Amino acid sequence: MSGQHPNRVALEAVCPRFQLHILYAFGGRGREALGWLHGSALSPGPSDLDIGVKPAELLDVRRKVELAIDLEDLFGVNRVDLVVLPEADPFLAVNVIRGERLFADDSYLADEYDLYVLRRAADLLPFERERQRRILEGSR
Image (cartoon, rainbow, N blue to C red; front, top):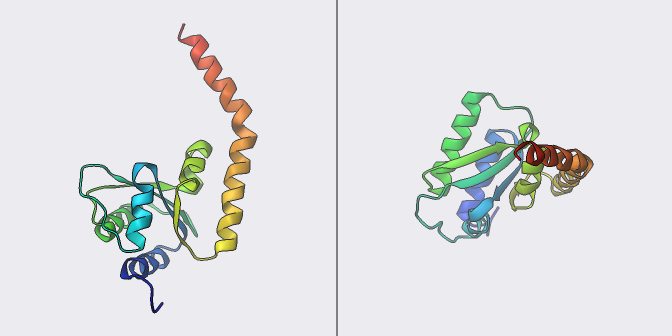
């Protein structure tokens, strides 16, 4: 760990405590969070930080709240919006993995998980398009 920025070291301490295999930052502040990992400060403001995680096992509500609070403290933001990937809509999960991967306990397995998420969304895309078409037809 020598030579790593303290922010990275701190994040790498939080993830095992919550048994997280992967942690992503996504949305409007994803790149900013990646910069934070390397020493840049997150800009102050009302905008939340979107974080997606893949835990070893599902988190109960209490653990989700504890994780969100720890991440808010760690990143110095007012609010973290937490997405637990195994519980997420497949298309939201794609948006998460298209963000910035800030932590992975095993990069190879994280890459495999990213591919799984993409394949799942691709398999469901025709059904999603049909669902959207029916919604639009019903609103006329």
